[in-house]
Image (tube, rainbow, N blue to C red):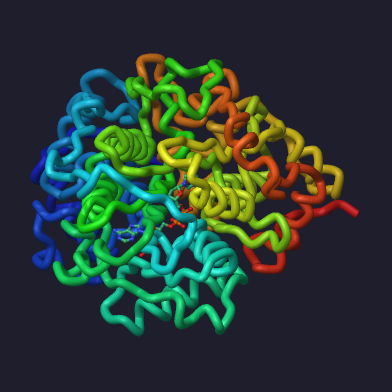
Length: 507
Ligand SMILES: NC(=O)c1ccc[n+]([C@@H]2O[C@H](COP(=O)([O-])OP(=O)(O)OC[C@H]3O[C@@H](n4cnc5c(N)ncnc54)[C@H](OP(=O)(O)O)[C@@H]3O)[C@@H](O)[C@H]2O)c1
């Protein structure tokens, strides 16, 4: 229950936030700089949510967790909350759900450093790879791209990795491949860590290291990005946009080499594309109405890659939809949206009755397709949609779970949202940390992000050209059917992510 509403000044809120943040972080309040980013204190999603809940109690009104990312230091946040406190008291409203963001002109962000150009106009493509540079090798998709490259070519892979020293970098890469069941001891000498950071100039690599890579690698696979559905564009720009610029910088130096860029179908999230068929080579000039900071960065980053292509760089662009688990082992990134949503809804006992399509592609299909397409001369300059050719309604999954006796009820989306607000009040339920993503209202129509993902509001992503390009390769996207659901749930249960006792199966 929230306490009675009353106005609070920015100073009062500041003192209160300082003491509670210090407590959460186990440090003294005077160790916190009110102008420093909250992120720099290691405020993770769970601690942030707990701070928000306590702040709501103190202020007596609902506080959007998004405010933490839009006003990311104590000084700015206190000021904004004080304004809201006064505003809400005078108007009688009870929550702060709309973010007043400055309008961001994404097209003005899509500017590629004019010095980034291919060193020569000519480029002889040979599918042979001896050395490649890869980003994102400690991530989900990156692990499978590494496996595919190691199996299908003789290349060594230089992997950008955030680590304090070589050995730690090596361990991070090994652990990641082990986690996804793709590690083989014989891979070890062919996977070489390169210490760095995507968000830094020259990817945080020493000048000599950057130049050495630029002079020697035959291709670049750029899979790294910060995937975060809560942060605004400004917080993700350095890694996702400027990092892509640095990758292109490396591609142009000393010798021309192809860049295989992992984009996303999210670049078509502008409502202009809703209900329309979008093909691989269609323009994506519309950005108005893309609300997620992450999707905004993917739109801008892909524009940079397109500018590079127009300057003569050989590039291929790969746009996956949501990437689901491996079709044979079921191994997946349990933190992805579908897994968290399914687990959270099972805990609640209710699913929202919505027209969603499960447009997801298994990671083995995505990684095999990327590596195969990247090695075909005809692919250069093209974009590919790794969309599932036959997406199925989300309800298929619910019916399948019910057929096992899992007691699930479908309720209207409004009822479900109300339950999320009133009944999901602890981090034990993964939906708790997803609340900002699920409840925030955006756009003129005050829609939530899930509203924007309803079938009618999404584009129809055509993948026909990609299927044609894959014809004859034996790479086929596995169907989303009961066998795949079985493989996925077996992994989720074996890994302990889903607990049998939580499923409440009726015998
Ligand atoms: N997963 C999906 O459903 C999906 C859908 C469409 C498109 N994509 C795209 O596919 C690509 C791979 O996604 P994923 O699922 O593999 O993501 P992931 O598992 O979250 O991996 C992200 C990778 O990026 C690295 N990274 C992030 N910030 C970095 C930085 N500042 N410096 C160096 N490395 C950094 C991470 O390194 P650390 O280990 O150090 O964090 C990790 O290796 C991304 O470009 C994403 O946008 C993914």
